[in-house]
Image (tube, rainbow over all chains, first blue to last red; front, side):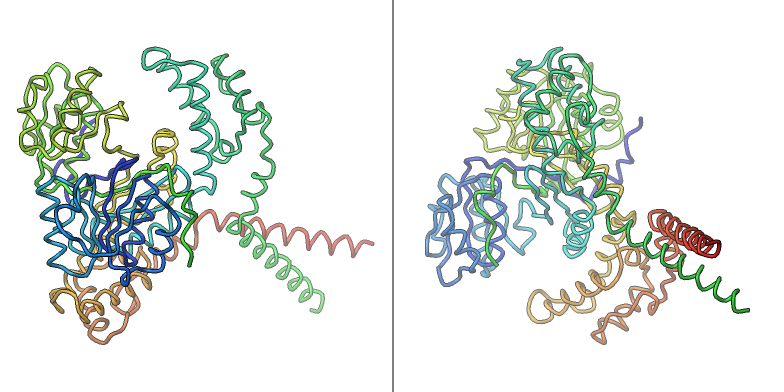
Length: 279
Length: 279
């Protein structure tokens, strides 16, 4: 297999899932952009220090401050290098362009990753349009070409994403933990067999079925599957997916054209027969 | 509008589009994982230093080294802190777990973001499953729960993503540049009007139509649209999209149920009338 044309490999970003568990993120500014940042950073389990004069706080930002002790709030403006002590990432969303650039320079001297809202050259990274459903996260980036189209594409993806995707991922994560308890150890032949079996389950079951796995079914799947080096079918571990089948058959996209076709068929036939009878 | 339940905001990552233009990325290891990393990093316009004994090079890695002068290759193992001089990011993909952890520690002392393949605690960030089409980049992360499901979901998204999405984004980027030439300046009322007009175009045109914009149509769109504070329809700027309309109307998912419904309607009506006539 040849590599892609190297000249075409250009103009993009490196998309990453940055790890912030127990890291310390400084957010400067409290407006609506900041409130969006707060949500994204909380999802990643970081501790937040928020610096912003209280008169500039967006209602959503206020709600976040009240709702969790994972945010330490200071009712003032950015004061200088001391505010960057022990900080792992800085996000600013203030209107003052000169102050924003100054904060960016201070961060870069200290090698602290920084994003300055609305000033691309002062950003080590951008945020794209995002989807989240449990452990599933999706980012759509147009690399600054069109945030609006990123949003439009996000909506299209949301529409076609199976509703149960997040749940399926959670259940597969649980199944994998259970399997690790049964067959512990890192790497080696066992690790490879474990990985292969998990891949086999994920590829031969539908997302919708994986999402319905409960504790009992998982145990049966491990007993009858892993132990016997096989992949039982959903119905073999007691999964009833009649309802879901029904659901997928009755989706609006199928029902609407079918009904319209049916009614047209009835109407035309009746019309045709009536015309013939009269003539 | 209330904020989401703060307790539910947990267990994720912060998804980012990291900027690497003219940055210096050190990749340690040359196997198949490394070859994937090389491609992702080249897309982001970084310069790469690759360190790996030549006997460990994957054929794809070799092809990348031969194809571009954006990679500086050293036929040896990682030698120590000197290799980290002037480096902005480190990605390792070697089998030696102890050496991997040592490299990670050296990077963290120097605040260089690092990803060590297969050792999550030694990663400042993960890579998810990715889609790229021109300036459009999409990342799917299951936060380590199931890389296989991330791939399955990636394929579903690829299937439902309009083929022309990447092209539409490129064209909108061009249109925006042209608009900036016509109405230059940063921020202020003009900046807001410019942004609003671009959003109006993106929301009232289909992706498929945006992708078909050529130079002449863009100029007409600006003459008849921007200058007159309106958004012309695709056909008003000379866009012929008969074929695409035909295509979307005749998709199998619509035609099949409509036809089946129609035939059923005809059959049942004829059957019903015949029964009545006989009785």
